[in-house]
Length: 611
Ligand SMILES: NC(=O)C1=CN([C@@H]2O[C@H](COP(=O)(O)OP(=O)(O)OC[C@H]3O[C@@H](n4cnc5c(N)ncnc54)[C@H](OP(=O)(O)O)[C@@H]3O)[C@@H](O)[C@H]2O)C=CC1
Ligand SMILES: CC(=O)C(=O)O
Ligand SMILES: [Mg+2]
Image (cartoon, rainbow, N blue to C red; front, side):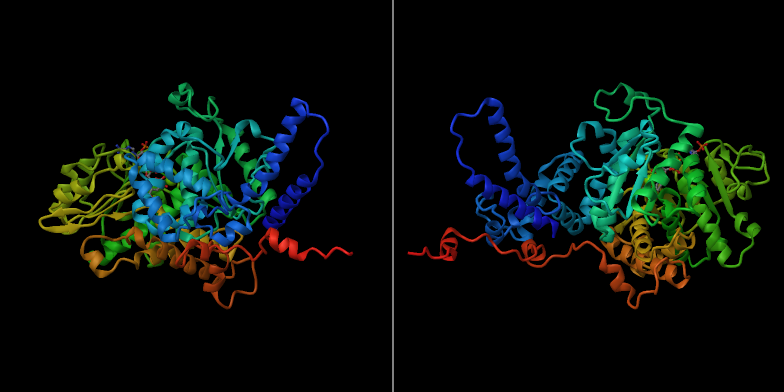
């Protein structure tokens, strides 16, 4: 509505100016410049909107629309169908040699033509996901200063304390925000402290909200809290976009985050979903504990990853036909990802009626110092029950030799720590050893798909955080699964935004895990793949969203009443339309506004002059 009001306003101004009588004398340079800029403004106003990222259809504007919107002549004659547009984009996409160039191309397209971008991402998800998400997004974050072009998210710096609400309200894209993905850039994938460059991750995550769960992009706000960085390379980098200052720490940092949380709900409402991403592990757990019962907040690295990890374990249970409680599981890494999975696994096993002692008996945890034993000082309360009453063992290979895990779950950012010896040892003791290399990006994987298959004679059930191509082994094509939280968070978020609970209950991650685990077919499992293919990620998100929303309504946790008669309809009611018919123009038809009358029509309408 306002779009067309603005269009009309621009048109009226143009007409008024055309009627303004000519100046008698030549304008001064200053007057000339003023006139130039005001003329410019007038013309630019409607064009800015028509060609804004949100409304732009590029060559898909039909002839009728081109005339109606007064953009006829601004585009070449060709009117492209959706298929033609996608072909043009794909041709461009493939013309770039490196993945970072492809990333840059897609970002530029997103800035100028949002719907076409999402259409392309959806139509080619398997090809595009590794570019807009891990692994390429990791490289892009390291080069973010060089790639930076335009407004894509909101930066709040440590100097904005006291007026964060003001900064939040500066967001130009929409005043009704449903969800925020926030990072402080301290642990970006397995790449460490990237400071303000971490924005790339928040943007990538939110693009998946739209591409996989159809959440309208204008309702989403990626935020980077620029509280400084301890990365000396960034301090020296002339292209760095953030503060070249030490990180805010201690009480000041906690107060900063408190102000941020309060400012968000005061600006956008208590229901705003706040997604924490890539904070350092101590902060990730601290804020989850602090805010989970008072805000609609979650931590993706802990909780999203947990859902995906447990889904994978349920898949292994299906392949091995052995209940999880009979498996020996070794977690390598005691950070957000590993401990998130371990915590949810504990919940899953508790739901099966096992005692804490029965649950912890077969679960081992190692970090850089080796096996976590009771001798270890300063372990968190979550880890304590898993600490073993024995002498510490430093070497991972020794731990594997001694306890013979059937499943090993790595989330360490330590590339290659699953050595040939470790994989061979697991394969010697188990017919189908489960190997998870959660670390991102690809070059941080604990082992590659090829190594896992080769050293286990093709018997490993291997999954990794970043995508690995299928591997041919002894004439069999083995497909690694992608164990990445992107198979959980889009659906969880859509479910929560639909059912609107006050806070996000922990149980929904188990709901998500179970739904996700049902996706792989028996044939997928036969090939050792416990996760759905990326092409199915949208169906996965949809199913998880449905079950999550249903859980929230069924348990009476929704803040809306009465519960919907048709949950599917409610889920779809607020989603972004990505599907297209034969042409983009058809799908994106603008509300019917009459075209400006042609000069001939205008003449006809003029009242006849009285004689
Ligand atoms: N696939 C997915 O969906 C997800 C993947 N990840 C990835 O998981 C990785 C870890 O993330 P996060 O848990 O937040 O990270 P943290 O850095 O908080 O945790 C890493 C853990 O690994 C341990 N570790 C490091 N090196 C070794 C080693 N050589 N041997 C044994 N343990 C080691 C560390 O031990 P210590 O404490 O002693 O230093 C620490 O406990 C990252 O690469 C991240 O990208 C994260 C979230 C989701
Ligand atoms: C996938 C993800 O969230 C991570 O690697 O941090
Ligand atoms: Mg993450």
